[in-house]
Image (cartoon, rainbow, N blue to C red; front, top):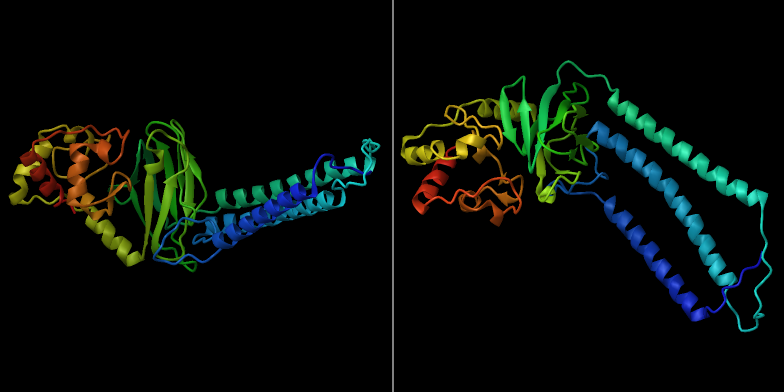
Length: 357
């Protein structure tokens, strides 16, 4: 079968070939960068740097899928370049359309059977990995965490430990010789969310009225970034989370500190009075006070966290004051109301919150 690219000059064909080559170069460069080693002090979320058994299984599956799809791309690309070069329009060609050939049993079988085989192989490989992760036996010494997705922040509850925190998940490192994985029960308080920490596990959705589960067993300490991977509203992009993988000693020290009630310092009594006599107590909880709200993050130890507003700003007195006065300045679309306190009341409230460590 002979095809002719009518009306197409050789210069146009060459420009298109160059464009395709540049595209391939860009894809190869992106693949090289994505597989490059990520330094420990720059916790970029990447599936290509796994530090947990589920993430490692997904990483190897991803490499397998990329290898197959890369081979498909290479074959198609080579055939495309071959056709562009061999059957380009020439000045000596006849102006008439070449004879068309229809029907080829061999070709039709090839482009039907081969794709089916590829899909079956990918399906079986993916199913095997999913089953291995979901059906993994649960050891006796696991850490159980209930993760609740809110618009637009994360709530973490440790039922067996009596700890409640927000946005920053602390879990112990898991020694392969004596594993202590973390099992998460995933709930949603409002709409669909998705819990995703690429270096530790795959994505799992949080759906209203449904309980989903996942687990992770990090092999080294450090900070790992995560993200809500399901569009859940205006501030979906700023629904960040941080997973702090601590040594067992540091994790136990963190638990002991989190179980302590809020400090009652006398020199911030005015700020505590502002907190307890405003709408703050309707949404937030502070252990040892009148505040028992569940709509917003637990503030008992809020100053032990690095960020506020689920990673939207650093946890500093200046940002905290701005957040209280007008949350829209930091996180437009958030559900926290602007308090509009007087300057003296706001300063007193910020000083009180700074003691919640």
